[in-house]
Amino acid sequence: MPPPDRAALDWAWAADLPEWPDPEEQLVEGVIGRLALSVLYGDSNSGKTFLAVDIGCALAQRSKWMGRHTLGGLVVYLATESPQSVRTRLQAYQRHYGRKVPNFAIVQSPINLFDSGADAQAVVTLIRELESEVGEKCELVIGDTLSRMAAGANENSGEDMGTVIKHAEQIKRDAQVHVLLIHHSGKDQARGARGWSGLRAAIDTEIEVTADEATGMRVAEITKQRDIPGKGSRFGFRLEVVDLGPGQWDTRRSSCVVVPADAPAKVAKGKRPSEVAGAIVEALRARGTGMKRGDLAKHLDQYQRQSVYREINKLLDAHRLIETAGVVALNKSAQEVSF
Picture (spheres, rainbow, N blue to C red):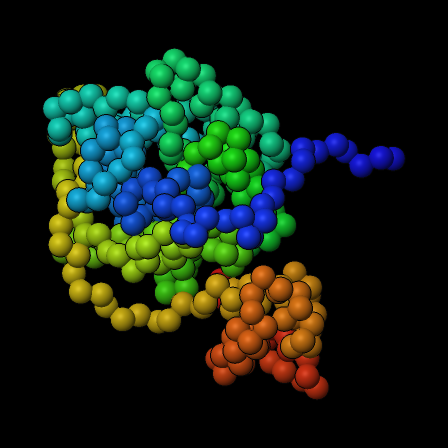
C-alpha cells in the first residue's frame, strides 16, 4: 500500500538566514507569543478562569493587559466546562467597565480533542467563518478546561494526552492562532500542572496561578517561556465582586472581575522537577522497565546528553530513581508522584 500523499516540507538553508533574527511575534508583551501553545493552570478557585477572560477581553479590545501591550484581534473561548459561567463572567466584565466587549466569541458546544480530529476541524471552520463575518483575524483561542476537552483520555498517559496536544496544535496551525489551555494543579502544587509530565515540554508558555485565600491576593507567574522573554514575571491581582442584580426568588446574583494589584514577594516552595526530569520519568513510565543511562540519553535526543545524565543523578539523589548494574528505573515512590 503506497504511503499517503502529503504537502512538501518547508525548509531553508542556514546560510541564507538574515543576519538578525526576525522580531519575536508576541500576542501579549512578554507573556504569550503568536502562533504558540500555552497552559494557564492553578488550583480550584485560584482565579485562573477569571484571568483568562481578562486576557481575552484585553486582546479583543486592543487594550493593554496588566500594563503590557497586546496585539489585539478576535478571541474564541471554548467554554466546554461551563458555558453559563463564562457568559456570566463576560456579563460582569461588561457591567463593571460599562462597555460591550467586541470580537469575543463564546463556543457553548462541548469540544473533545481526544476523541478525533473532528472537533479541532470544527473549531478551525468556525474561526474562519467568524473572521469573515467581523473582518478581524482571530489571534487567541482559549480552551476551558484541558480536562474537559480531553474527555475519555487518561491525563497521566503520554499516548492519550499526546493525541489531545496534537489536535490543539492542529487548531493553532490551521487557524494560525495562539491556543491557551486552562488546566488544574496536581495534588502537590510544587510539582506543577496535573497529569502527563510531557505536557510542559510540549508547550511554549506555562503560567501558574496561585491564591492566598486569607488575603484574597492572587498571583500569575510565568514558569516557562520558550521563545520570548518574560519567564519569571509575576502579576498580582484580586477578584472584585460585581453585582448582577436579582435572580430567581429575588436572590442577588454576582460574579467577579480581575483587578490588578502589586504581586507579593515570592515565597520559596518545594522545587519542581525540570523539564528534562519530567521527560526521563515519562520515558521510564512508558517503557515499563529500566534503561541504561546511555540508552535513555539516546532516547531523549531532544535534550543534551549531559543534561540527561545530570537530571538522572538528581533523581537518584532524591530517591525517585534506583540504579542496579548500570540500569536506572523508577522506584515505587516515583511512580506515585505526578511530575
